[in-house]
Image (cartoon, rainbow, N blue to C red; front, side, top):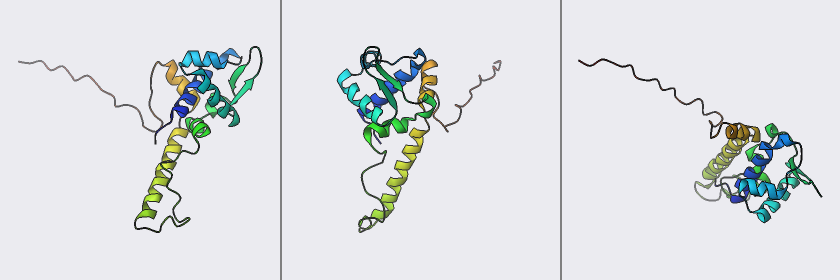
Length: 163
């Protein structure tokens, strides 16, 4: 799966909102664009799609802008990407056993595998919340992916005198 520019920009914009959620007021599109380095006209379109999906709310007029519609703990990267890009799938191959999808040798087996790959991608992206991204950002860099476990512990090798 390749995350589109829209999916990346939407995630970056929402992370910016989550990072500044404690300020208690809406954030203008201009401010989000400046903080994230995203083009404002494109960002406006993306935020409208996110509003339509119920991920953000907007306030018009002076002091207006966008806020998260729910706590960052309840918004996943999978939901964000789906809101701007549509369903997360490995490809547009159709569903096994529907509309003649299995008319050719091996086709149904592969359609089933592609469907499993898409499900795995959805579950993986749904394992990351905006709150997780805020935590990573506050630590100054990436952290572990869910389910990947802790990094191996490295101990210094004992010093053995020579000679």
